[in-house]
Length: 250
Length: 217
Ligand code: HEM
Ligand code: SF4
Ligand code: SF4
Ligand code: FES
Image (cartoon, rainbow over all chains, first blue to last red; front, top):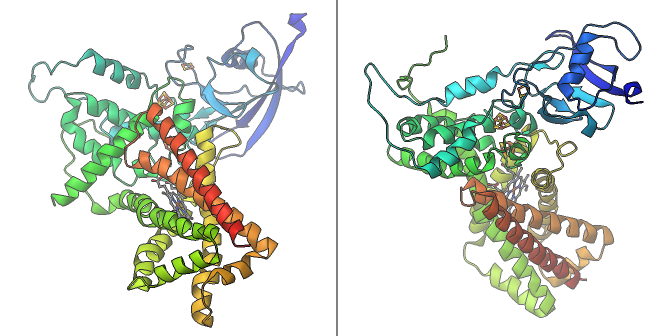
């Protein structure tokens, strides 16, 4: 019966950063309500491929198991998403697992998402609160603005939006939609506004918003339903004005 | 070392790093203002063929009597076109289309924007040669009969249909994305309405363009 059922997986593997990728198939016993992570754990428990050969177990990343940390992003049947929230039952088999190749692939499904964290540093993704002395409490934020900001605060730097963006690739310097949406997030904070222009410098820079071609894939794939394209359009508006005025002031 | 220092960077801001931003805005502007307006005007002019040979020839004379016409053509059409096409080809080359995986409507439009950019370029080169440059070199008169003699060939006619529909698509979809580039339509609802209006625009000018072609044969 159901215990006999198997799940077939096809994993794009890579032994180390500078080696070639190859595909490997696995067949694992089915259990009800399995997600892709539990399927991968099954391989980890018994690393035998579909031909019955014992192999190195598949490497991947995970933490929260509830779609809030962003560590387990990978391409599942071609589309980028979180392995922990993807139910095996809903997928066509063999289930194809590939790393997000927009990022440097370290091993099997493990990628290096450092560029996203670097991008957050570039856009000054923080609120400058205190200097050498405490500056007191900041202005109040209306609940409407809190609600709007909240959506952007849920970004888990998972990388899906960058992986699906046709304009984030090795040929383009684009920092990508995640960092731009965070720019909007920090710029709308009343204290964050103090460093707004510094962030806009990045937005109008070579790595900035001019690289977006409005394909709007980012907003479609974002697991957190962050209104990325709204942030992009708003930033376009601000960046255009900022670029023009700062140039006229020279 | 990376630092989380809260103070502003003391490095001077390099002007050159804005190059892409300025080029992309000029690219968008060129596509909308001189080129887009010119194309609409051009389609309307050609649609006078629907009113008959005389009306069309009259209209051509009217345009040819505009003072400094070659200068206007060079500065308002040729230069923006060469810049827009050149930068557009560069943009097309650096983006990696993934419509096979992500079959979303806007992603397909993004892909077709690039395809129609190229078809438009091929079409414009042939079209400008046939009806603007060749007549200058060979001294032929531009009129209804000249267009008729070209379009009577089935292959040329089909090429024109593809060229015109592609160019109209490119401009219609370009208005939609241009509205985002200039930060006009910000949210999904306004972008959806803009998309519908642009679709209507595409239908109207596409039909007008193709029926005008039929009027020549
Ligand atoms: C001749 C060859 C042409 C090529 C290769 C070309 C290429 C492109 C490309 C690749 C884009 C997308 C830019 C982006 O996503 O960032 C684009 C946008 C656009 N093009 Fe063209 N194009 C051409 C001709 C034209 C013509 C004749 C018109 C006007 C009728 C036009 C109007 C536009 C507009 C309005 C946009 C939208 C700009 C924006 O999104 O901000 N293009 N073009
Ligand atoms: S809308 Fe812009 S940022 Fe988002 S996927 Fe498309 S090109 Fe990338
Ligand atoms: S914006 Fe969405 S898709 Fe992009 S990194 Fe954040 S959570 Fe992931
Ligand atoms: S394990 Fe945290 S998002 Fe999947």
